[in-house]
Length: 171
Image (cartoon, helix red, strand yellow):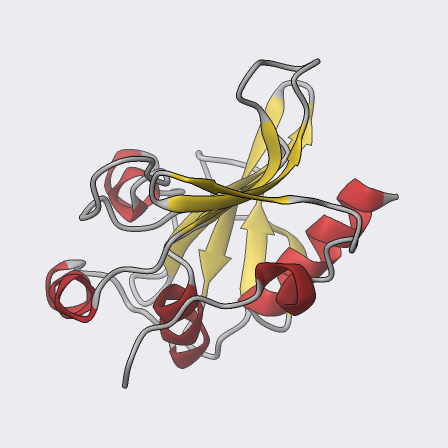
């Protein structure tokens, strides 16, 4: 199976008015220099090469479901505003997502089943971050606590999560 760049704008429902910017190892939309000179509302990290992808799958040590594998074939993580971050691999040079290792080794919620994988973070309020967790059945949940795994939200899959968060960011 070959990895490929996807049309992020149509895949995730970004407004047609957003201009695409090619960055080193990423595609970005929604440049907002009022926030910071190089700030973009939506950043999608380019997919890994076939060799990098194979190495990522072999060495990551996490349970990657079919929906996650499909996602990572087209995108090595993403960031939506400062609210949503989907982690990825650090095998690329240049701009990189937060590593999947971070949530699975450094800040894995206590009580999280071993078969589940922390795939990202979600800002819940000014001072509270949630942990996004992928499960064996492909569903994604959000836990608000590092001290115990508690489900505060659930999505059918990673794509549903991303589409919902992008829709919230637009409104």
